[in-house]
Image (tube, rainbow, N blue to C red):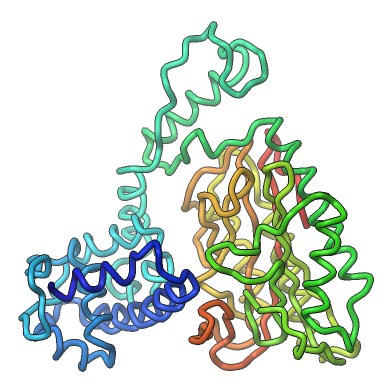
Length: 433
């Protein structure tokens, strides 16, 4: 059995402990990002050697080097012999095709890789946008099944197609033909779906209201988890967080330098001067809602409070540019502008997401994007805006023991607000906040 087969059996094992797998992948992605940053500094220099030599060069294990070789394989000028009996002594090369690599990063939605600053010295903004659009055009839009004008509209309105979504679909087709990224029909939410999401969101908002009324110094984050469970039980709803990919609690409670996914803990007792994000996600009637709020405990340092307020203002700026037929990248750009102009940084690796019928749907919503890029926003598209904003650098670390808790690498405080919305015919409607 070769190294690649060993890696695949370990990393893609559906029967493995999901928390352990999450830790493995989070750790690997951090190492992968560092290697790409180094390679992109000298993109025309061929790096080669044995698998073991390259692992030592980049300070990683042979296992992670195997994973990296697997990931970069389709972007290489000459593929490596990794499929059969790959060993530590196999000679390999990392000579990559720049265009292929960039497009493959886009195809994988790995914005933390295709947004690496090292790309700036390789391609200018115009060329990167061209490559981005070429890749997105190659495989995102799924044309709807043929529907005739007098057929019932598939949206469920009861109207004839020609009187309902005919022009909508034609517009999507034209945008696709022009090279825009158009999301598939199954992500569009009907009126019935939106009403279902609103019912779920009422519970979600109610929980965060309750937290706001009771949170104070002396409360533990496990107390918050208990409040959540009691409120959910009283409203015939369940937590979307609990057991999601192995997450063990009903809510995320992230204090000070914890960016996201903080674990409730009876020993984490809030004290005067803390800031905390409470991130709540609810399932009711089969529909998902998701939002988070920041809470300032007592006398908070003015700069920390400014961080919290700036993050909140950035969400408002993102909402202000939500409109049908605009680009989703406009939202990220607006958010980022508010934060960076205030002297703060925005986390690259985490962002918002589509939501409604499932907890995490497409599209992924980044907040380090450029205006005029990304998928087209359309009526019925439901997603979250949830920037994570650091007082210091944007770099993160993930807890190696649990694979979940994300902190600022430099120990600086971080803030996050999250809202859920649906795009309407003339703007947006807030669903959960």
